[in-house]
Length: 473
Image (cartoon, rainbow, N blue to C red; front, side):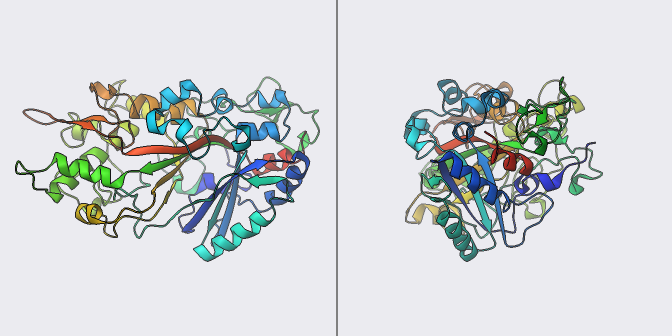
């Protein structure tokens, strides 16, 4: 096990800042390369490292590939970044793979999808604070330095809200089932902890290899500020990727009323009367968890708040036929655990699923429709404004991790033996099937409940790498 250099790792990789309830995300563009480097040198001193647990505020920073180009990084170094990061999120191939079609197509996005260079995001600045007042003060301070620092904000601030309970807007507990990283204290003695290289560049991954990352010739100016590269043919190379990772950001707008209207209609009695409890049960089957967070595979008929944080379950032994948690449920297909080939129920199956894990660091935005998040209150509420999730995930290999989960598990209608069932929560709409005896039940023509409103791929560098980027030409 390699020792993690926490002092050089941006803190967002280590923790989600759950104690910092206020957060906002700023989308920036470099307008003056020289002044931007000076600005980066200054702001690098404010970046929160992983060995600190901030109690008032935190700052993290990431670059898009066009941002690194605008910064003037040498082409030979740029070529070392992964092809997925270089290509970005909006190529025709990526649109098909990620399911970004119709209203979710990039041409309809509020940010990140425009072909206009003037709207290209170069830097993602993530600001966290203990409360809204401190967040505003910190954000104001940062924005006041943009013009002199050679950067400008090109879109309105992406704000977040803290719901009364840790739930997303459909009303379900979120943020459960996070992978543990070897080398962190919370992972000590945990057999299921994953190698650091799955999430942090410059460390060995689950295959015992180093994931592709950008390297710098030892003779390049300022290269001695970077660590020596491991696992490469030329040991004199310096590692620009070490202690960094790739960050995926997608702004996902949730149609909360549409979601609950659909499940209320699907569970209505023959006379058309609505059954709230039946609607919640169907919604839980679609999610794979009850509103409290309790897994339906452990409590299939009713919510059990005592199991709200229970994550110690697999599918093959407890629910091989999908009679408790349907095969197409959101959490079963985005983290299938031991339920898929090769050899379902075995360690091989668990290992296969673990090769595609991601660290989630998202935050909700927009006010909830109703305080209790109950179907009747939601449907009766006046719908004002947009709401959804700023989905953020971290992974060392965008293709093998985020894109694989999105394309092969979430969007594939033939997942795990199904025929026409994409993910019922984040998918493009279609059929949701509940396995049952003697006859399964299918719910057809479900609409799309989540629309993409913006997104991009970013490189979250280590702190030494960030300081190098502020100097190198």
